[in-house]
Image 1 (cartoon, rainbow, N blue to C red):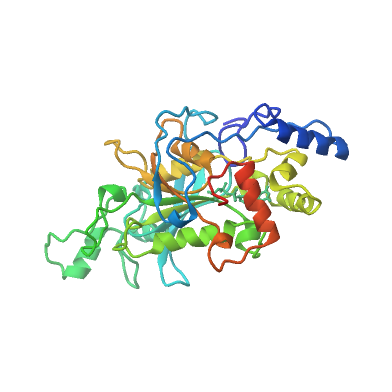
Image 2: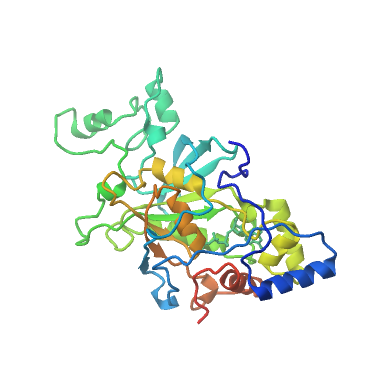
Amino acid sequence: MPDLPAHASPASVPQRWSNSSHSEQQLLDFRLNHHDHPPLLSPAFTPPATPGTGTPAIERDAHSIPVDTSSEPASNLLESLPEVNCVVRARIPTTTGQEMFLHLYQNNVDNKEHLAIVFGNQIRSRSLDAPREGETEMARMIRGAYTGRLYPGRSHSRVEQLKHDTLGGSNSSTSISSTSRAPSASPTASPLSPQEPKAPLVRIHSECYTGETVWSARCDCGEQLDEAARLMSLPSNLPPYSSGGVIIYLRQEGRGIGLSEKLKAYNLQDLGSDTFEANVLLRHPADARSYGLATSMLVDLGLGRGEDGQSGIRLLTNNPDKIRAVEGPGREVVVKERVAMIPLAWKKGGRGSEEVEKYLSTKIEKFKHMLSTG
Ligand SMILES: Nc1nc2c(ncn2[C@@H]2O[C@H](COP(=O)(O)OP(=O)(O)OP(=O)(O)O)[C@@H](O)[C@H]2O)c(=O)[nH]1
């Protein structure tokens, strides 16, 4: 596919700030004039006014907010979704005691390894589970295409052996699912839970080496990843987080500009720019990301719209642009609800920093993230 950015998305057509506000334009003009930069080429970042996604109060952060994007046009999206293929999956026990399954994807538009971190047993990758001609059972298990758990001596990837081992070889009607159905079609609610399981929780997370690995307090990326994992690990009998979940981890570091450019942006921030302006001064879009790969990965994981048109996800985000973008050009995925992410720094006892406060206020004022400063 020609003309696609490295991370596989709608080609972003550079344009001058046609939609930015007058004051933003003035500010940039001022900065540009005083830094003697050549003219900028940058797309405006104007999030759509997504119906049903009003700003939540902080106290209601755990609540989902209904979303209806059916009347929204699919602007700036690829005409068709990228192809993705889950090449390997492995069980990862975590330091919190919960387990997750890490899925590694390849695709036909970039050479990066994007990831899906899957919580719960019901969400399965179709491309991983698909039979491969001539493949041995051992090869299937090594690439993670097995049901249940691996154990020393296991010789078969499929459910039949599990049944045999569990039930001593008898024919039983006990159901051990081997299908790759979406969790919404195969509820996981414990008998303790009187409620219907909610739609699976999904977070589309963009790589942030500084926030996730070297403890940066310039942004809230690390805590968002932790919080998403925490919510998806909650016991299935505790509504509303009862259907497992997926963190799609996209390798679009620094809002798509890469780590080296993001570090330059940090230096510009220390020189007085905010995160939006710093990107633009470096001649990048304020946000260079896209979400087509995430949509494809969700469809592969069985979280697509489905034939009944009923399935849907709950999306953990404050970013209004993500919602319609993740749904894909043909609404291959449906976001039913948005779950807000409240910054730790704003919670009782939370520790803030000057940098993260500035980062958050820029998100709200310039990127129009749906957070209340109240
Ligand atoms: N260019 C740039 N990227 C940053 C900066 N701080 C964090 N990032 C990147 O921003 C991305 C995360 O985007 P955010 O704007 O924090 O959040 P979001 O994903 O848009 O929205 P949420 O779903 O609500 O978290 C990651 O790729 C980070 O590496 C910065 O100062 N400059």
